[in-house]
Amino acid sequence: MRCSSRSAYRRRASPPRSPGCARSTRFGASVTIPHKLAALALCDEVSPAARAIGAVNCLHIDGARLIGHNTDEAGFIDSLEAAGFAANAPRAVVLGPGAPRARWPTRCAHGAVEVIGAPTRGGDVDRRAAVDSCELRASFARAELVVDCTSLGLGGPDELPVTDALPLDALPPAAWVATLVYHRPTRLLERARQAGHPTVDGRGMLVHQAARAFSIWTGRAAPIDVMTRALDDDLRGT
Image (cartoon, rainbow, N blue to C red; front, side, top):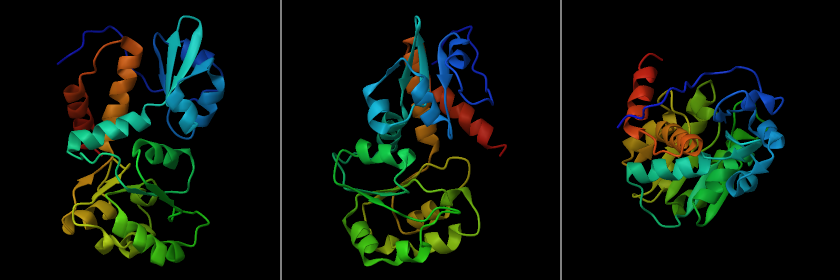
């Protein structure tokens, strides 16, 4: 499937300091970290999802109004469903600091969710205390889905020792493990696959959140297969 359009999607390095940065475009703009909170403050109107999550990753121009959306939550759900995860209202464990980036998985699971103050690179969390706790092991033992929203998967000296200390052996055999990282293999997913767990990396979420933004801007169904191939081709060079 291909969509005929004369529009172009270009990267802009400047943060969204004023509404004009988005209104200078035809449809709107995508917003990435660390600017999603600033984008929220620029909007004339905010979608229910963006308001509940507290962050905007998609700006849409509707006449004179600048409308803020958040497609991360729905994009993550879409990526799980596309990978075959079919649990209804799963019991999920979210590893993250509790900031907005870790907030939307707690909503998208729509089930019993535990947010664990797990380690982050350069953070002030006691890494060993976080991953060695009996509470964390008990949480893993109840989980149908584990979502890593920390920065550990980006690499660095903490990734191997901290990830290897996570109690993946406590997970039920059918539990899924997911990460938001899309540009490199992570130790967490490697361990999960070795233990026989289904895994999902961040590529699907990246594509599906962008697909939802495309539909918001154009009113058309997004060419997901084309977008997926384009991402895979781009990542082969990284």
